[in-house]
Length: 203
Ligand code: NI
Image (cartoon, rainbow, N blue to C red; front, side, top):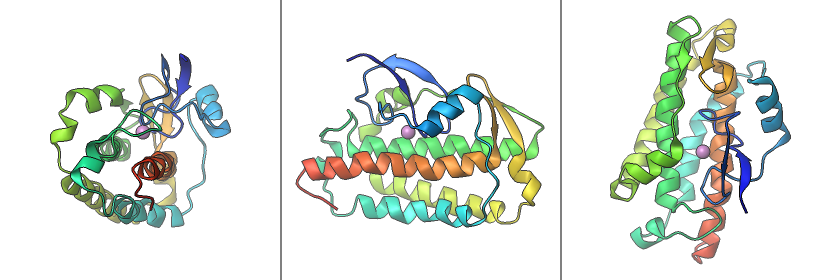
């Protein structure tokens, strides 16, 4: 079925609505109230809870645990739900993190910078994802968050309200992005766990 899909917690895509099937990893039909709210208003207002920074870092080990015990055939198989393999899903999370951390850095160092759309489906389809290494993707993800958390922990409260303007979604803030990128991992881990189930290798 062709649906208008809201990519629920893809911070680099929040608010973007596009036509397509709900098969790919991020493009789930499971749009949440939060997503609809973000869709309507362009950004999520959150007061920064410092514990979120530690949750943000903890996503690295959590992602690593989620792929434990999988062989190369498991990683490149394409069990449902979603069209992506587990390797594609992990590389997507790593690519999204590289983009989001760069965006937050620019929001912290420039006044309301422009943030450009990135096509996650094209990243997976055109960037030789199955030729990328799981271990390096996990390492990039973990190291990126661990290093950026050292910055986040030192920021004054008002820094989390610093905005950027996405060319499709409008205003976002640093604090909202930290929260959304915790949710981004949890969102995709649900797919990953279901894929493992289909492979006969539940967590
Ligand atoms: Ni995503």
